[in-house]
Image 1: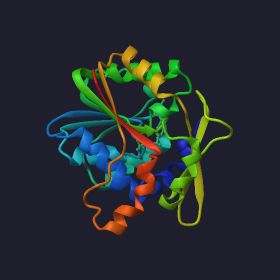
Image 2: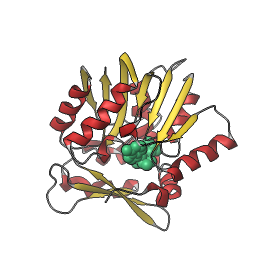
Image 3: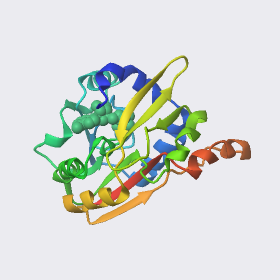
Length: 245
Ligand SMILES: C[S@@+](CC[C@H](N)C(=O)[O-])C[C@H]1O[C@@H](n2cnc3c(N)ncnc32)[C@H](O)[C@@H]1O
């Protein structure tokens, strides 16, 4: 069943504080994004605005955040009320989104992994190209379809694991179980192969597609600290995509 983020919005916000988010996820995403100065950015599936705020602080001129969950957007707006950054948050299903504007960059952290079929993935990818200027880039991080399920438990030390019932095939639900101080909660993604992603992205109008494994921030120094992240990097649970329209 699809995850209802209204019910877990606050737990999810806390799970974004786990160190791997900063040292690997945030570092790699912004390395791929490069210079954002003066650009207009659409942050799809923005959740509680975790990346929307970083995008604005990195110099984007305009940031629009869109999410289907009212609970997540409420948290995002609460943060905006505390510290005004000028981010425009909207509640909408990306699949039917038709804003009256195109953007220099589209970001969508953990959106593609909600598609359960190649057809659903194409609908999402088409919504992305619909809002992107020609020649501009879509950058995203998602569940890594190349990680074999035998490595799903290996990220427990970093605060989460992935789990699936039976062999992972097209459309198989893959749960992410996050461990916070005294509780845990799960969200459900769906496995679709690399080939299905490439097909949908190309059909939606992307002419260049590159896959990137997470990279460790150079701010992590010291042999022991870098060694600590080696299991994550050896079989990455998440993967990044950089696509040009
Ligand atoms: C794992 S969270 C990621 C949130 C944010 N991008 C981040 O990295 O913190 C996934 C988000 O996707 C949103 N989502 C899932 N399907 C969506 C859709 N069809 N349209 C808009 N948002 C969607 C969920 O409500 C949830 O907030």
